[in-house]
Image 1 (cartoon, rainbow, N blue to C red):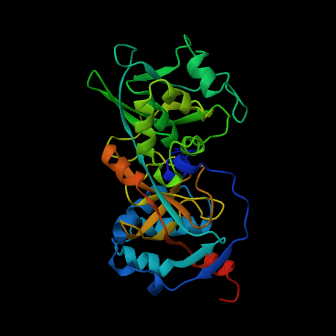
Image 2: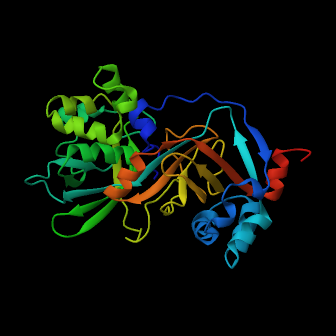
Length: 344
C-alpha cells in the first residue's frame, strides 16, 4: 500500500527478498471448469473489488470491460463471458503469504509513553538516492527539530513493522485517529531481520516469524534496537485523510484494497487490476477470486501473491501464519489471453 514498495509478508521478514532474476514466462489457457471451487465462490464480492480499480486501467479492452461491469447483475456470467483463465508460470513454485493494516497507539505530541516518531518525507530526500541510514536517523537524530513528525508512537517495534507494512492506522490518545500511507524511503536496500537472527544462531530458519521477531526485540532492550538497525532501510509516511474509515488502505493503484479480495502481485507477470483465481493450500485453504491491486518488493514471480487480510491485530496474526503452496490463475480479457497463446 503502496505498502507500497515494501511487502508485509512472512517471506520478507524471515528470509529476505533478494533480487529476482528475470525468467521466461509460459502461458496456458484453462477452462473455468478446471478452477477448483469456482462455482462456489462469491463472484459478486470479487466484482465489487474489481470495480474499485478497473476505471484506472489504461488499455481500451480493460476500459470496455469496466464499462460493462458497472451495471452487471450476474457476476459469475460476467467473468466467464469476457475473460479466460491463463496460468502464467516461470518455473518457481507458488508461494502465498499474507499482509494486513496495523493499528498503533500514538499521540500528536511527544509525551509520556509516546516517544517514537512517524516521519513525513524530508524535503531534501531525493527519490532513488541513498540518504541517511536507519541508524543515523534513530541514533544520530538527523531529523530532530525539523518538525517532520506526524505522530509519536508508544512502541518502537510497532514503528518498525509499520514501515514493513507501509500503511496503518493510529489511535490517538485524545480519542481521535489518523491513517498513514507510504510516502517514501531513504534509498537503502532492505535487510532481513529474520535472516540476521538465523545468521547469529539465535533461531533456525523455520522458527522465525513476525511475532517471534517482535517478542525477541521486546525481551532484549539493548540488543533489540540494535538488531532492527541491521536493516538500514527507513520508510517515511504521509497522512491519508481521503480514505473513509470503513474502507481499506490504499494499494499500488492508489485505491482502497478489500479484505480477502485484494492481493499483491508482481506486475511484470500479473497485470495490476486483473482478476486472479487463487487456490491456496495449507492449514487455512482458500479458493476464491481476488483482484491484483497491490505490489511489494518481496513479491517477485508469476506464482507469487500476498493476500490482504484486513486491519488490526487479529488480521495480523492470521496474515503472519501464511506461507502456503497452491496455484494462481490470472483472468485476462479474451483477445489478450488468445494473443499470449497463439494457436489456442
